[in-house]
Length: 74
Image 1 (tube, rainbow, N blue to C red):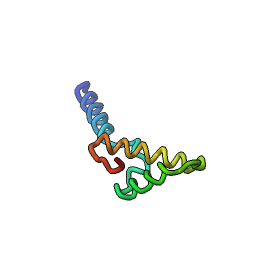
Image 2: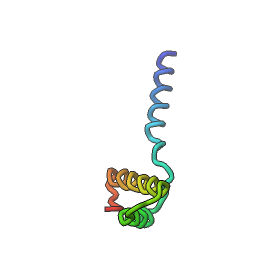
Image 3: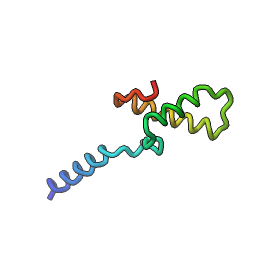
Image 4: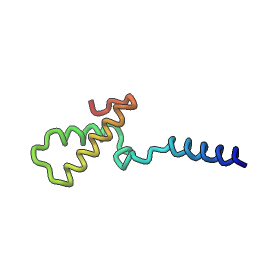
């Protein structure tokens, strides 16, 4: 019975590790669109609070993709 519990815990851990819970909505944006939005943010001198948050999300997604070897924004 203990082996079953250990196996169940291991399977749950592996399945959760395979999911990307923290990707966010910008993870679904195609590379070319993300690159365009990221570049727009680089040229904003005084963005609104909402736009600044969006730009932070684009930057975070670019960094996440860069970590996976996808240099869409750089």
